[in-house]
Image (cartoon, rainbow, N blue to C red; front, side, top):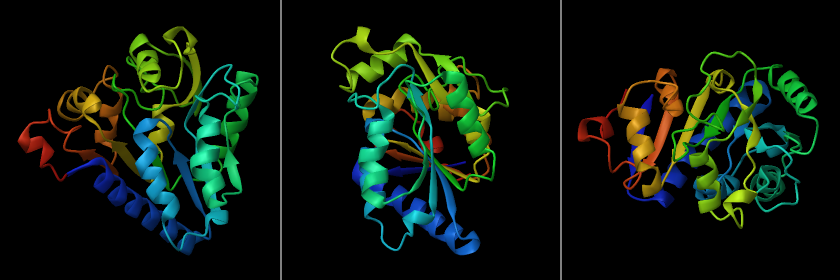
Length: 251
């Protein structure tokens, strides 16, 4: 794992997008295609905007997998992660091979189909964030670090639901679903490279807990410290509670 701290979220986004574009181009050059996992949420806005502007990426050769989705969520709802990815990544780039999680479909069928596809070949790079409660995808604390399934149905904790409401995706907290489909921790860790994009002061406590506390299911994103090629992109606000020696880590 390597921590990278930037002055603001825009410089963070440019650097992370540059690394992502480099990995995608290299994968296409070496094997003729690239397989990526895309995260959603307000923390990914600037990063995805920069990535979709990157030059010389042959996007039709990119295959994209979806990290998580609410159960019962229509794709037309403002909070739909399918809608988010279509508008902010797929339609902007011309990606033609993508595997979206249908929140209105039968969960078992959705999970089986997505799992079968993601297991066909290694993932070149996963884009992830960290929740205000330390969650990785929708693996809220205490996260399941052991399951070898690719996707599971999870129950969202109140901190996670409050974050979704606070970001403005729902009119009331009661509207936030209680169940979701999430890619598992072990499936994320199978990615060759992981880029974790975490801007904003509201993430500072989670960043400190995950990256200078114990590696624990109670701090789900802490598991990224075990990955040999995980790059954690922070801005000065999200890194503000890290000890100086941790913020300077290059490990």
